[in-house]
Length: 585
Image (cartoon, one colour):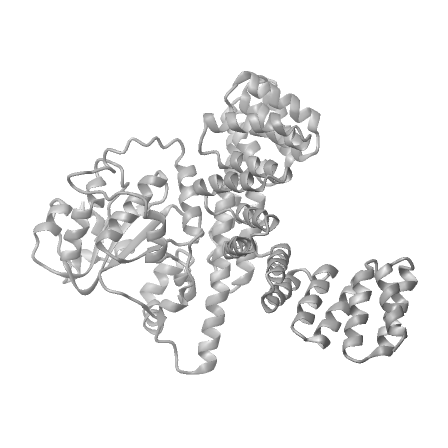
């Protein structure tokens, strides 16, 4: 086998068999690190699936300790693994690895819907030498290999850094360690119903904890301008990678259209990079494959449903409906066909047709949780909350991992102003799938309504860190800071909100209020003026603009603003009262 690889795969292995330092031993890998006397700079533990009988023993604490004992000072151990393990087993691997290598990191290339990761571990703290790494990546052979997987720069490479030792510890803290005499991974009985679902949950746990890398980077150039540019590029790539991960999460959810939009937004932040190229190539390829497979056999139910799902994910609902209508003639009572039809009808606003399809799906399969969930959503729309809650609880009895049902329960309780119950529901959802900026934001909303501003701030900030960076979230965070009398921080949030929504008069108005509280009257007047310019339908905007001019001593301008406001709002008591007071000046 080795000789054949030298003959046929030199383009991949670069003739390594003839390298003077290459030695091989056809023996058990676990034993060779246990008994060999040599020490190495790098030990690569290239196991396979961590719960498979053939490789689970390569993920025990004892084996990792033997790998550690083979290291030179400053050496590193790497182990390859996948993220499509059951989340408990995934956490056990992380906990076991970190029990031996306290300074560890998880790396994953965000260049595709990736399930492959590498754990790197050391017994000593380590950092990334920026200039040395840049030089190594510039070596022609190395550069060629990385460019083949769309990693074309040191920034693309650093985008692969997903978790530091703190994130790994946070994910795995509650779980046991896998050992030779207690091989809990090898005898794992956890049922993996869907490896994609497991990968989705584990990816969410990773994405929710991705650290800011700059504190680990050393040896930047001395030139201040270069250092500033590197810092700017690192921030740009960090945000782009956050979007790429969010797009991957959406892809696992079947939200193909939303996923591609998120991935495109990430790509636009780093136009010089090809990091996201494969996403779009694979999306096109997948679509073509599904169309071709479905065309080969119109009676193939699986092929037709897969094509319809793909079209639904792309928000091409009419096309999906045509596919499903054609297959319905042959499989009218099949629950999958009716469920996907219900999704199409709902997306097109055809509620009655959706109800009929859901009824057919649940009649054929009474425990079809996806169809039951759609039924619950329709009940919630109709404000039949008691019936919806009963249905969601039924769903969770069938499938306790359906985090969307917990979110739906939380939304109902929130509408009913039962905020403590809503928080409990959202937190159950987040315990299953952590990377949910919207659910985290919803918890913040509940705490805000309960006037627990400290917790509201914490959850809003967590949602922002996950990438829920939208004007409304910054606006809400600014409001909570304002209510907490942290006016400077409120002002920063309002300005951040205006970066993405510069036409919102209410944000300008609240910014003006925050600036007034900081005695920045001139800036406040400018903010109020912008609010009035965008929306002259609010008398409060005119009132505060006039008062800011009064504070500046511009009484004539204040009177003009009051007069303009009263011309539009002649019955505004606050304008009338304050205009009278200033007329006395």
